[in-house]
Image (cartoon, rainbow, N blue to C red):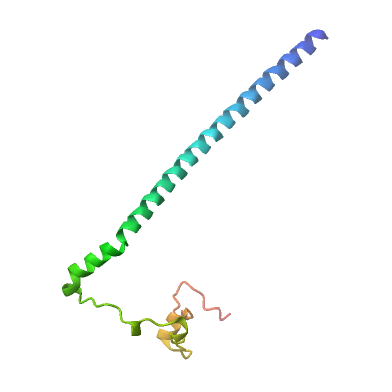
Length: 125
């Protein structure tokens, strides 16, 4: 009887050791995954910072002024007049389209697809 008990205990110890090894292996895999994600996040943050710096350089007023002066004749650029700036309230209302107007339906997103093919049952049953 003691022999069976010892075998059961040894089996439980082996099963527990196997389970512990598996849990440790899974935890290490998750830790590696977390490290990889942190590395990717740091890389993305660095990329964002570089893009912000690049944007600050590209949109710097002195650089833009130099480009305006350089390409003034080619592009026909002119200074913005005070009468060209309006308030939001001054914008015109959205256009109103009559139903059935093909262009208006496309713009409004209400286009009706009336095309049927031979593979589609017309539903006249």
